Length: 233
Image 1 (cartoon, rainbow, N blue to C red):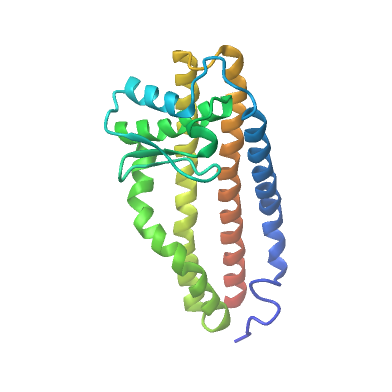
Image 2 (cartoon, helix red, strand yellow):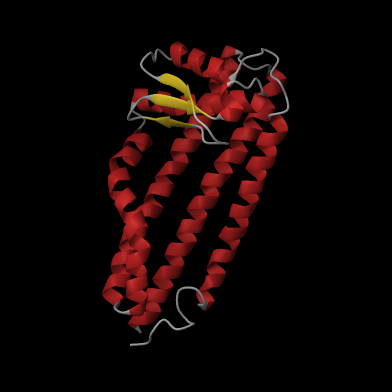
């Protein structure tokens, strides 16, 4: 059986499959950083902070058991369904920018999904425990398979496929949260008509990072399948 040598996981010709996804990931990270930075410099005309908007949207949706809290870091905003806490980062919580309002509304979109039982969010929550384990075991097992035994390689690929599935399910969750956010911002006039377009740009840039992550995972899975197929020859 051929060992991994310099023709395995890192120096394999199939590495070229990863290049488009890697470039997309770099572009997405640059795009979200630059777009958020740009519109963080524009104060919204209503003078609302991210915290203000989050609390108003939650109450408007009839959600009274979700707390809005501050979390340290940059772009670390997220909704925790287990503790029912919506956490807003340094640049969002007490910030009055258009970007802050857009991000806060997006996270409220996740809280609303949770409250209404949005299907894809329920699926993501259901598979998370399995994916959490799979993500930790996949590549160590794949490495063992590349060095020693095709069985472990196939097992690792199956575990990694679960991670890919999770990221694919995440896409509709994120897009839906952004669509809900924009709809609420428009209908409730938390932003002016002119400010909606910049908010959309911020959320679109953020969504691109999830697309890039999914593309990278799919590319990696395809590469692993090709390597496994060659090892079977």
